[in-house]
Each structure stands twice: as structure tokens, then as C-alpha cells.
Image (cartoon, rainbow, N blue to C red; front, side, top):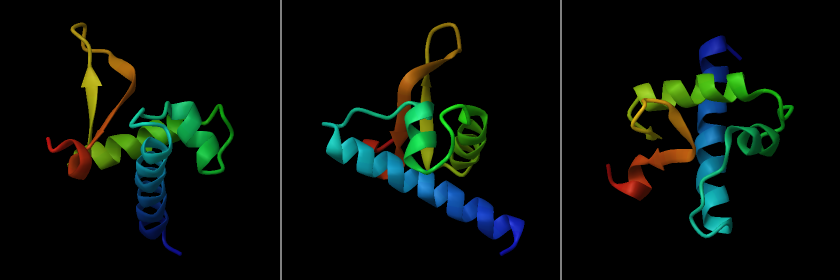
Length: 85
């Protein structure tokens, strides 16, 4: 498997996890720690999850809510085909 294929699979895995989590938790979005453990990474792998979420955001598949100060908020991930942004 090439590095590009591995990225695409991890991004898809994260996106699917977020969607499934929301279905199971009354539309509440997961934290990056919950995503990490949900896809089989250590709870401390939030930087890895953030990296892949940033790539998904660049691709236009997700968007993160940022507060007035520009900082990313917890449980903030919007999904394009669910949240219609």
C-alpha cells in the first residue's frame, strides 16, 4: 500500500467514524481523543487525527467551527453531506 492510499484510507476511516458516532450519540460530534480511540489509535494521538481532519477540511468534506478568538472548539466537526454547508 502506498503512502497516498494509506492517507485516503485513514481519512475515510475517520470520516466514517464521525458519521457513525453521530448516529449513535444523538448527533453529538466526537472529540479528537474519541476519534483516535475509535479508529484504533492511542488516546494521545490527537495530532495524527488533527492532521487527517485538516486534510478532510482542505478537501471540503468537513469543516470545523472556530470561536470568536479563532480557536477550534471541541466537538466542532461539521460534515458536508450531513450539515449542508
